[in-house]
Length: 247
Image (cartoon, rainbow, N blue to C red; front, side, top):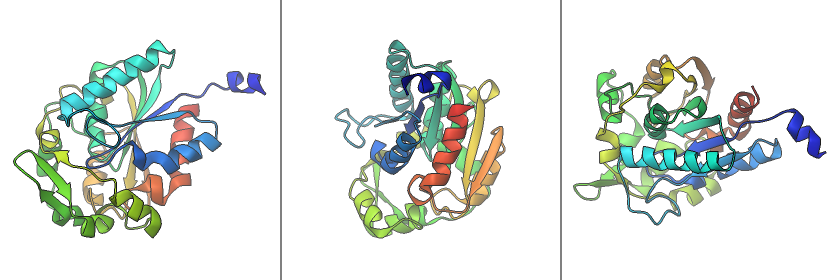
């Protein structure tokens, strides 16, 4: 069956997590993509998940993605589908503005800042809508925030099974405020095709905000779920990524 894989080349999906999370949040999605023969890699941004690097800022996170893409290219892996969740949308925007090897950008309930915008600036420019995340964020010190574990479920995992919610909350980690205030320096969506996955029951990035940001992408796909569709709607999220990776 070896030759079958070569007849229908499928691009790698590279997954970039959002704030307070790690590569671990994509494990169920990656298992489903594996079942479909779609190769995927999830990146731990510096200081998150299993990373032993110090926490960084948005530009440092984006550079880490760029470095990862360069390492993949050295193995012959090019034209990747680069997907970012939540804050990860800013990271992939910055990374793709300095790395020309990305074939398609996917924004999963994500921020999609334009050139000169930070996540915070994009948020402030939108109409005011409160979310459960607003109440769940806790300031640790002048540099970092964390999530109140009692309020994490409502903010991130409202439609997810309780067992996976418990396992997810246990892995949340601090997030530097600088990641939200640094500006994106390029406009990769001008030259790279993009898809926005809009989550209608999101309590972290408000659906009304997602509707506005989704208009900055070429394609919009709507899922009737929470902020974590890679857990709550694994098959539907895999469908989206598989279709892009095989197109």
